Structures are given as C-alpha cells and as structure tokens.
Image: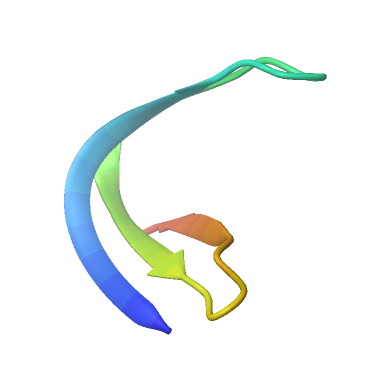
Amino acid sequence: MRLLVARCQVDHTGQLAAHLPMATRLIIWKADGTAADIPA
C-alpha cells in the first residue's frame, strides 16, 4: 500500500459522473492496483 497526501480535484466519468472540488486528500494505492481518495 502506498499513501500520498496532495491538494487536488477529481473529475470522474464512467457509469456515474462525479466531481470533487479542490481539497487536501489522502490517496491510497492498494496492493491490488486500485486507488481510493479520502478528504483530509
């Protein structure tokens, strides 16, 4: 697992579209190659 703290915004398109505004986030890369972000 890798952890990164960054100030960023997220735009996602797929089955559902999502926009997360600029914020400090904890981004987690998991061993299976997936990622998750958590607002800090």
